[in-house]
Length: 90
Image (cartoon, rainbow, N blue to C red; front, side):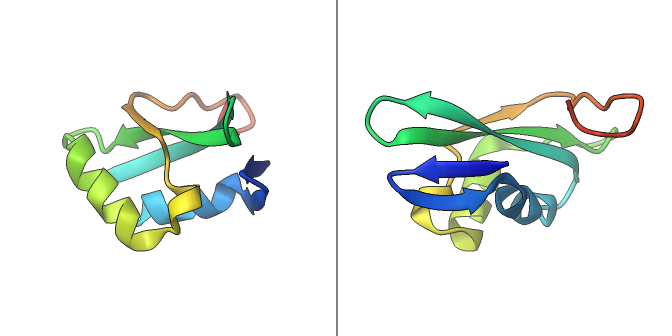
């Protein structure tokens, strides 16, 4: 899925790829959301490994080192990422 932030286009998979390299992360899903100023922004859902918790501030710091500013998620949610019967994230 293509995300357009202020005219800069990128794939949601690029954000997800960066987040998956963070320790204790098992699944992620980047979603575009409408933004009245930039057109869209990124929201990231993160699922932790079953036995571990993830600190949102540490994953934000990690993502800042991995991604350009326009690709940074504006909101990170720690939750279970839904997977459909064909193993696609829904």
